[in-house]
Amino acid sequence: MDLAFIPSPSTGVVHLGPIPLRGYAFCIIIGVFVGVWLGNRRWVQRGGRSGTVADIAVWAVPFGLVGGRLYHVITTYEPYFGENGHPLDAFKVWQGGLGIWGAVALGALGAWIGCRRRGIPMPAYADALAPGLAIGQAIGRWGNWFNQELYGKPTDVPWALKIDPDPAIGRIGGTYHPTFLYECLWCLGVAALVIWADKRFRLGHGRVFALYVAAYCAGRAWIEYLRVDEAHHILGLRLNVWTALVVLVLAVVYMIVSAKKAPGREEIVEPEWQLAEGGREDGGKPGDGSASGSAAGSAEATGSPGGAKS
Image 1: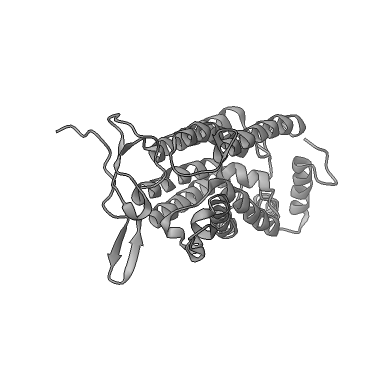
Image 2: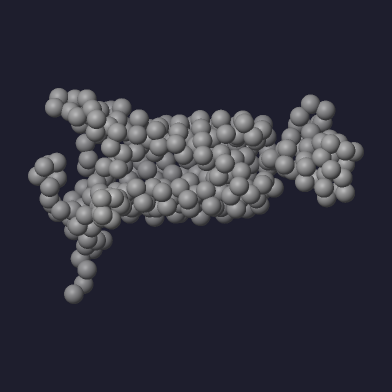
């Protein structure tokens, strides 16, 4: 018998004794690990030290989770603070509800704190992490499949998603557009585009990250348009559609301005460590004459005082 639809899981949680193992949480965790792993590989390829991406992620990930939840609760406040709302449910992240806009915004703040503590340029870190973020999002979207949420309009296409009825939350059973799958595939395409463009054009100074943001927003706008979950509307469009369009424009503007002000790619991404490595390769130790020579090269490459801008 041909499969006429994508089935939904009968449950989004499996209990290992008293411990609940939630599919949504597993998807988020796996996405984070894959993103950090790929980000680390790219950081090392750019001249950085292995492990730095994970060290900064210790700051970025918690900030991102808090930001994602805050965005969701603020823009969909009715179930929590509206009439007959349940405020404590705002803390039940495992039930779903993480806004990517808030996750990236507050996650970026956490990454900035981590980068500042390590003396690392934030744009270079963001560039290394960008494809991993897209792949992490692709994996994380499967959490919506486990929770049977954020699907699209009713449809009978062969790849439709079957949703089970749940009167307790007002969910109507049927077959719908699997918007989680559309976004998953789009994010994988974004990751491939970003990796290709980075190699082809040697992007730097935050332009890889800006390309990821612009490409993601272009897809999110039309995928968001298909969704049928409750959302606030402005001029007939869902709030997240407007957010995607505005952020897309800002990302494109950044790419154009950045390309004019700082063409090319950074030569030094982790100054302190690369300076030390340069000293060892020259047969010296950090702090001796060889390191001083490397410091002059570092200043030239980064445009720091004492060296000319490249």
